[in-house]
Length: 254
Image 1: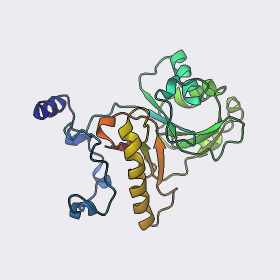
Image 2 (image 1 turned 90 degrees about the vertical axis):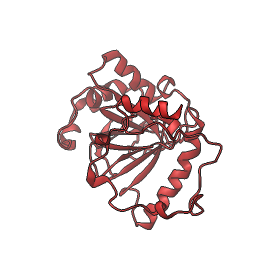
Image 3 (image 1 turned 30 degrees about the vertical axis):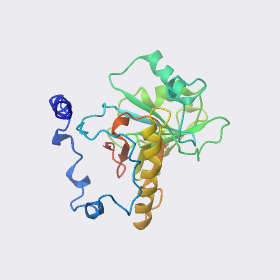
């Protein structure tokens, strides 16, 4: 059964080496884990009763998307269907998109553990947008339509955003645009209310990643770690999206 399952996914185009990230982002030397004993005693292990699919080829298993909208909520778990949760920015953006129709590409909307640092308006939040590589502050449910038209219902950027020019747009009202301060950002799916595996694996991964970053003397702006809502592929947990070196293309790791 496992052989048939793997063969089916490979016929569907999964596992194609052409889908690997650019060579400069791949490790040239074996990582430290290649010398770990089995079972490893140096790193915390996932619980043995946690079923994770080891058969499906991971390359190509993620649906393509154009923009990623990452909403600061300060939480690491959310109701199972964040786009249907009333009186939230995620829900407001979902309906803003439905009213306008698709431009021919998918946008991914995620809640995150990010705490709103820039927002000053009551009941507002910060929102990171990739590949635009910006943070928009003071986003509310009431400004979701304007936010969508200004930032999501537009062509994808081909060069860095002119933030000074954007901030002169009267339609922004109290919203304000800043450059994204993270050189690298790692997003870990922790959405346990969608799948328990994500809720279990994300904290373990976050701890291990934080240890490595500390060893390399990297601060949160060099490489940030955020928990995010469901990004798909929970049968392959843990799931990580890495936005690397301010580049527009993500590296997705299961």
